[in-house]
Length: 154
Image 1 (cartoon, rainbow, N blue to C red):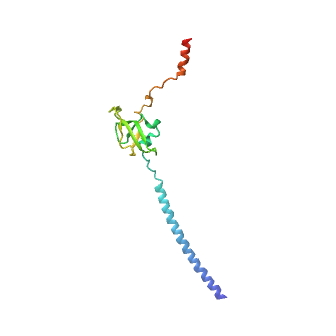
Image 2: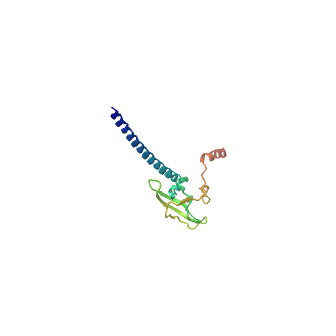
């Protein structure tokens, strides 16, 4: 019986050492993995670059898809297009566009021409050249003029 107790005590010691070594390796491996995730999380906190927009993505937020408004590529200076016609594909982000070229705010051509590079991601809206108030005057409703005509007849 004494030998059985001695054998059992020896087994407990060896398994205890084995468990300690496994726990040590487990803690060591999780410590290195948390350091790696900490390093990657600090890299992921870096601000992402803002995705630039093509002509159609800029025009979709303007009234009437930007017709009559001025747009230019970001690297152009003093050159813009006044959009006259847009042909959209079904997805709304691709298509064709036509416009009148403006240099220093004045039109350089009378006829609109097809705009090249409309799918490149470098377009911007130029607010100080666009004049949305230049729309043709709206006609007065005939009901507003009708009472005056009745008053003249009486």
